[in-house]
Length: 72
Image (cartoon, helix red, strand yellow):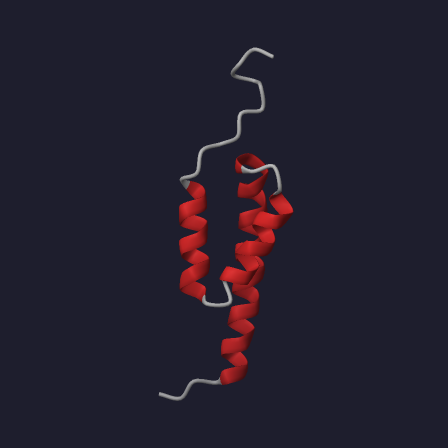
């Protein structure tokens, strides 16, 4: 089976953009710096298994307390 390197590169770019968007929306709920979370998601997804692991671990992180539960 031959692997087309151009197709692989396109897959990685599309995957990195997808993981970056997912990381941004998760970062809005779970961190104070969602842009940094999205950037890290894109960097980690250069190797797709690291990108998936980053998002899975990020999903299990607790949400930040924005004061709604504390009654403020």
